[in-house]
Amino acid sequence: MLIKFKPMERPSRLQTNASEKQLACLESRCESGSMEKLPTPDEANSALTVAGSARRAARAPRPMPSWLPPVAGLLLAGGFVNFGLAYEYRDEPAFVAAAVICLVLALLAVASTVRAGGVVPAPAGTPRERTLRQLPALLPFVAGGVGALFAGVVGCLAVAGLGLGALAWLQLARLRNGAAA
Image (tube, rainbow, N blue to C red; front, side, top):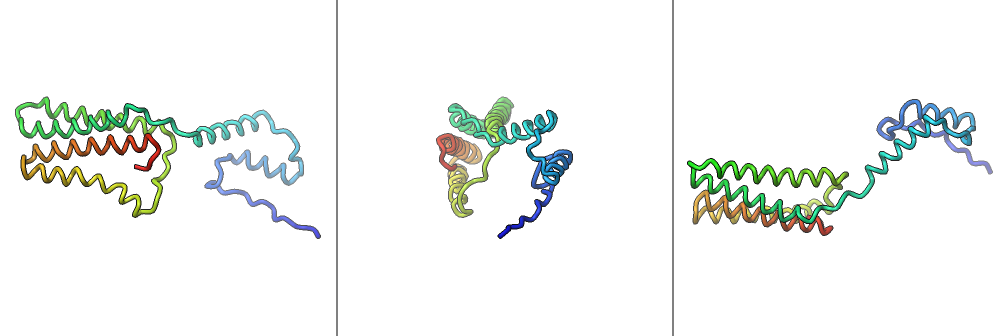
């Protein structure tokens, strides 16, 4: 009994990054039955380039540096505490400058290490599990509200900043150790 195979359909542009020239060459080899013919140097170089870029994209990301969780947490806390101090001491612009510098440095530290990590997978788990993992981020804001009752805006920013810094430190440390944040 003979089994007939349907001819391969040409993949769409969304399915492949191969050039039109590569596809035409492959189709002509399939139709002529000369698949055993060696590729030209240009074709081989093109295939190696595609394979190399795929390998680089699939390579495991670099591990998070050990300094990132404490540095990001302390800079985040320092930024919010300095904003609180800037509110209290309005005639001292150094507090605003220190707050902005701390927050920009925290952003740059996190962004540079995340960007260097390559492909970032989507968060794991169901939407409920992801929501429950992110709920602790509300605690510093609730604590900041309580701090506002006792010390006004300064207390709110200081308590929320310290809480957010501690939370960032803990969650980045969990990510560094391989747990979902």
